[in-house]
Image (cartoon, rainbow, N blue to C red; front, side, top):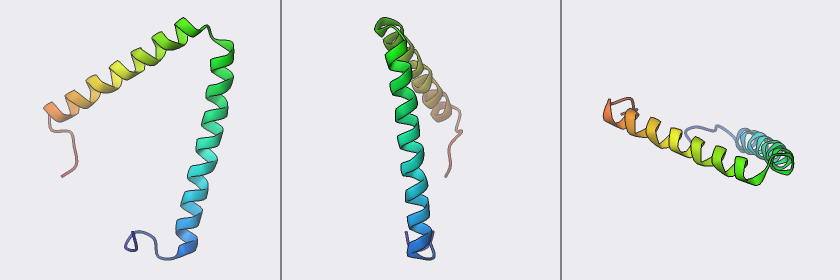
Length: 67
């Protein structure tokens, strides 16, 4: 970590920005979860999980990763 962040304030800014985006994302997800029927929400979550797993498998299969 010391190689990436040159000072404690740099690290604090990065962690602060991460926290702000996490809270905003959770608030947005809570609003969507309150307004969408549960069955549709679960179907969408499973669909997104499947797409992510297929993409990761294809990236690994065809060598689209960092070395």
